[in-house]
Structure formats: C-alpha cells, structure tokens
Length: 119
Image 1 (cartoon, rainbow, N blue to C red):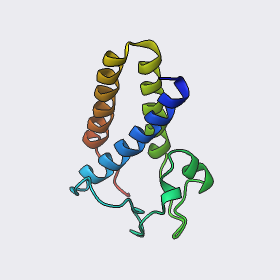
Image 2: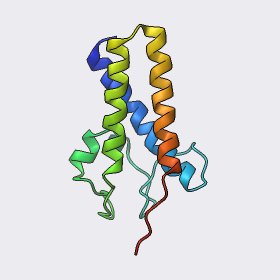
Image 3: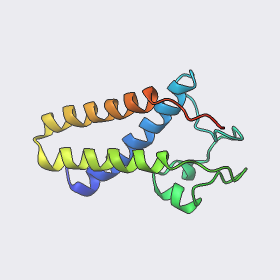
C-alpha cells in the first residue's frame, strides 16, 4: 500500500472514529446519517470528506454556522498519520493489527474524556 493510499484510508478511519466518539458519548447508536451537533441537519456527502470539508467550511456548519470543533480535524489527521506510518513501516498483517488497535484507542480516549461544561 502506498503512503498516499494509506493516508486516505486513515482519513476515512479518522472520520469514522469521530462519528463513534460523538455518538457513543451521546449514548446514540453508531449507525445512521451524520448530522450537525447544533442544528441536527443531516450532512451532505461532500461535507463528509475528511479534513477537506472542514477547511472548505472554515470549521463551521454550512446551515447554522455553529463551530465544528478542532477535535474533528485533529482526530482525522492523527489517525491518518498513524495508519500511514503503520502501513509504510510494518508488514501488512502487523500494520492492519496496529492500525486497528490505534483507531480503537483513539475512540476509547475520545469517549472516556470528560466533556467540557459550557460555563
């Protein structure tokens, strides 16, 4: 697997990790369409492109202009970098195991981290 393909795969996994973190913290199932946390409007397909849509939208919801939060691109970029490193530095079977463990760890940390109160 080339580094570019591994990065794209990692971005997709990072986007999934964000969805899992948000939904598990809210006590929701991880299935279903993605939506804005503020206005609950479903996201269009182009709004689901990791990092690129965050940049294109300037970190805000296209409908209500609520901020998306910096965690979203950080998780996507971190997972992408971790997966790309695993697939370029390790043998394929080991890389799959390491990448899977890394994504699960990111989700676990994201879910376990306490939410900040709006004080």
